Length: 69
Image (cartoon, rainbow, N blue to C red):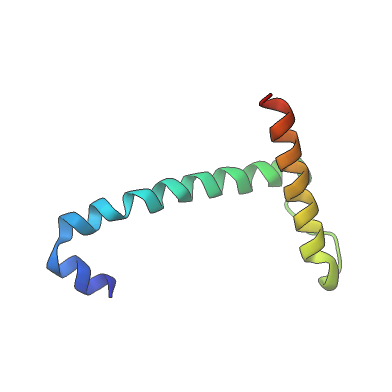
C-alpha cells in the first residue's frame, strides 16, 4: 500500500511520514533513558518480565512527574 501511495504522490507521502519520525525520536529517547537508569537487562523470569518492565516504566514516569513540577 505504501508503494502505491508513493507512486501516486511522492511529496505527499514524504510529508505524511514526518510525524512518524518525530514519534520514533521520542520512543528511542525514553527507551535509552530507562536503560541507563535501570539497566539494559530484564532480571525476572519469563512469567514476570512484563511486570518488571511495567514497574520500570512506572518508576520512570513517577520520576519525570516529580522533576517537572
